[in-house]
Image (tube, rainbow, N blue to C red; front, side, top):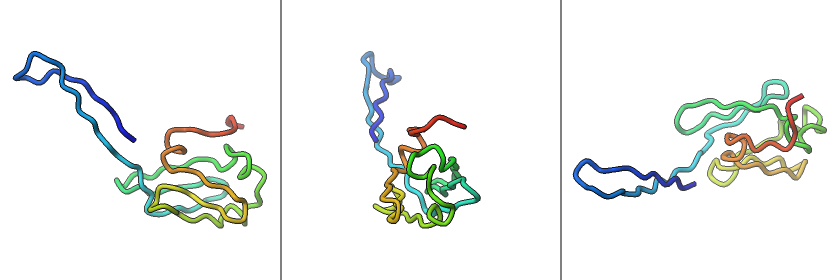
Length: 100
């Protein structure tokens, strides 16, 4: 993801633009009930309800547990459900279903 920030440098009269590139990477993933938790590379812990995604909402608890980190920690994969989620997407709140 790229973020563009404009600012006025103290020694210049014009606007400078800086591009910051960052990627959210998960180091591990686990479940507690139907909550999915990610430990991120910057030591944050992020959790979200599995029920906010259609395929996960209807999945049995045992199927939910079969999650792996893929693509260097940038994606979550559940092979048996044919479900892929990006770490960046869940952190940004791009859910398919509203909260219950």
